[in-house]
Image (cartoon, rainbow, N blue to C red; front, side, top):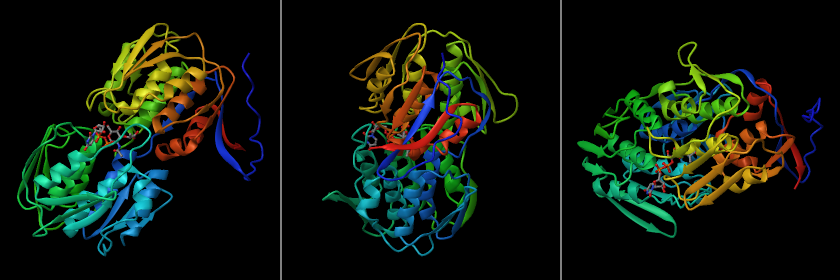
Length: 440
Ligand code: EPZ
C-alpha cells in the first residue's frame, strides 16, 4: 500500500528548524526535465574570467550554493559580478585589486582554489588559502603547485596559505607531465599558461568535458589552446585577452542523475539539454542493464526502463571512464537490482559514505576498502537519513523515490551545492517530494 502524499505542503515554520526533504516513494515519473548549466564548468570558468582585463558575459550559469560562494570570492577581489535570475553572469575583472581572498571564503569550497592560476598569471603574485579536505577526501593540490613551479613560480605554503609569485612577473611556458590526470590541476595549469611566455604542453591532462569547456571559454577571450578534451593540451601564451560572451555546457552529472531517477522508478523520462557523448560511460552502463536510451531530437536523451534489471560491476575512472560523480547515484540503482554488484571507487579515497545511509533504507551493501559489494533487494523502505556529501545526497533522493513509504533527508546544504531546484524539477516529473523544515 503506498502512503498517500499530503495534498498540500504544511505551513513552514522557521524557528530552530533545519530544512529537510520528505519523499514518498513508489510513484512513477513522466515528462522531460530541463538540465541546468554544469556546476563544474561554471565554477572554473568564473575563475578563468579573472584572466581577462575586459568584461565577460557567461550564460547558463546555475543558481547553486557553490556558485554563490564563487561570486563572493570574486567580489572580495574587487571584481564586478552580477548573476541574473535567468542564469546570466556578468564578470568584469578590469579593476582586479585583491590578490588574496579571505580564508573564510576560500576554505568553505575547494573549487575556490581555481583562482590561484589566473591570479598568478594576471598579477604575478597571489596568496590563496589552501583548500581544506572535504567529505570525500584529503583533496591535495601538489599537482597544481608542482606544475606552477615548473612554469617558474616560487611557491611557499605557510599557515594554510599558498603564497605564489614569479620573479619577473611572467610565467614561462614549459612541458608538464601530470602524474595523475587531475581535473583541477589541468585547469589551473591551462589557465596559468594562457598568459605565460611561450608554449606550455600539459601531458596526461584530464579529458573531462568541463576542461574542454574552460578551454573553449579561454579561447573566446583570445587564448591560444588546442587539444583540450584529449590527454595532451598545448597552450601558446598571449600578452592579454579581450572580453567575451560564452555559454556553459549542460551538467552531465545532473542529466545522469535524472536518468537514474527514471531508471530507479521504472519510468520513461527525458532530459534536455544534454550532450549524449558526455554521458557515454553512464548510458553504456544503463544499456548493459537492459535500459533503453533514445534521442528523440538533438541534445535530448530519453530513458525507457524495464521492471527488472541485473547487477553489474562499476569502477570509477577519470573521463572517459565511469564518472566518480555518478557512483553514489548508481549504487542506489544497483541496490534494487535482481543480482549482485561490485562498485569500486578509484578516484577519491572516502566516497563510500552513502553506503551506511542506503543500508538504513533497507539496501544490502558492504563496504570493504574502496569496494562496495551490493546484493540487490526486492524493495527499499523509507526512513530518516542524513546526507554526507553532494552526490551521496542525490543518491539518497533517488533511493527515496523508489522506497516504500516516506524518506526524510537531512543535510540539504550538501544537495544545494550542486543541484538547482532539484525537488521542483522532480515534482514536475510527478515525484511526491517536498522541502520543509523539521526541528533540529
Ligand atoms: C573535480 O574535482 C570536480 N570538481 C569533482 O566534482 C570531480 O569528482 C573530480 O574533478 C573528478 O572528476 C570540480 O570541478 C569543482 P581531481 P578535482 O583533481 O579537480 C587527487 C562533484 O561532485 N589529486 O581530478 O578536485 C585528488 O585527491 C565534485 O561535482 C591529487 O592527489 O578532482 C583525487 O583523489 C566532487 N593531487 C583525484 O586526484 C592534486 O594535486 C582526482 O582529483 C590534485 C588531485
